[in-house]
Length: 116
Image 1: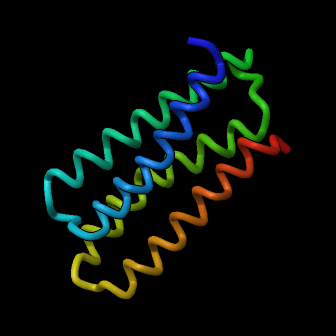
Image 2: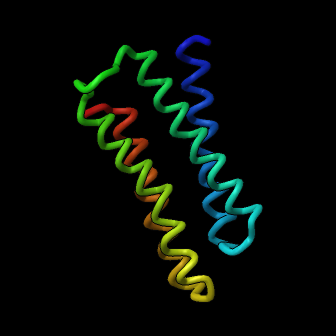
Image 3: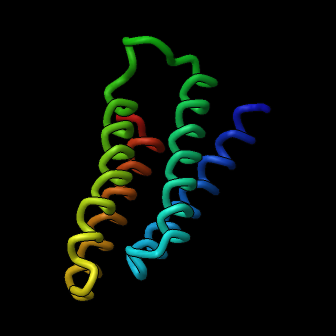
């Protein structure tokens, strides 16, 4: 696969991640929504690692934007599990959390595009 195929796959996985997040937010106790969210999260992280490797980054001397995206990916994967299961019946709070998670995803997009 060339770099643009991997980049397209990564962008596509980002969109499916948001779908999985919203599915998980609407029914946090449902097994299907947990599976979809986990699958899309793993595929998003794998495509990001593959994309970074195709750019020539590997080892411990990674740029700060890759470390930032990695930290955001872990937070965006772990926080919904921790928060949605505890707040399953508080819809207004879940909507505000969705806004925060989408904002974190937009920060990851900014780090990926502009590579500060």
